[in-house]
Length: 320
Image (cartoon, rainbow, N blue to C red; front, side, top):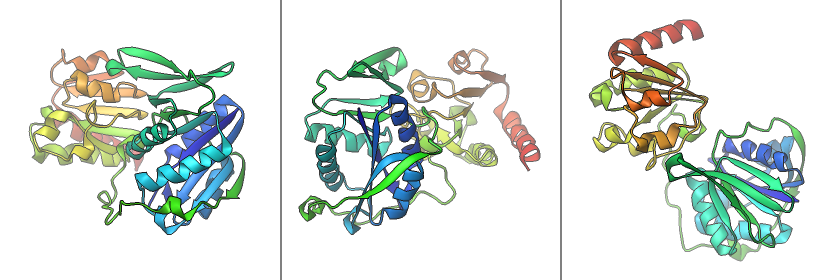
């Protein structure tokens, strides 16, 4: 079996999920290929090779400095056609989902998105993915093994690959594949020091229970002490208290951190869908009957304006 993973980069740095994909590939056995596209992908390729990326296929070109759907699809389609993998793995991130949907359509191949496990059964590959807000767990198999099975894997499901065999292979592609009618004029970076929600091991999220935008710094202070990311419920995003990029939930981001702390979040299904697979969930709410307590690992019933600052000070003392 040939397993092909797509490592994505931003500003010349590998997405952390790239190493998780390699670990997922290892679990299937077989020959691993890892593609990396960048303005200069050589150093990134060496990192991937040292972490078990197998045959690391490198395409470097100025046109690949920033993510471009059109160019990435054409270049990756060319590599996939050349190496004929059985399965192609990518991250279920914002760019990963957009890219793989186009790739699968371009190659007229099957796809499963936001997968939480992938396994091999004889000649068939089966992907496990939550459906209908996590109330149904679907098993999706590739019916046509003559075509690659495109799969995006939810981040933080697999651990990062730490080591393994790898060899860097420089690839050249037709210049025509690097042209596009789409031009990237500007890329805006997230605020300095912020942690990407989908990559975070710790997330501290706020809900309507914090009462107003003036109290968001209180929640962010706890997130910063824990070196985590700040998240938010849809209610406070809709209220204009924080940016949409912070939203966790069905219409926001799906996250899977080691620790998720929900501050003043009641636990509407829209929010639970996006965070219920977190390893450990701590809920702080003054309403003892709040639905969030039904899925919480630990629950604290009380006033968030007393509990959150106390937790922040305690962690400061313990972690300093």
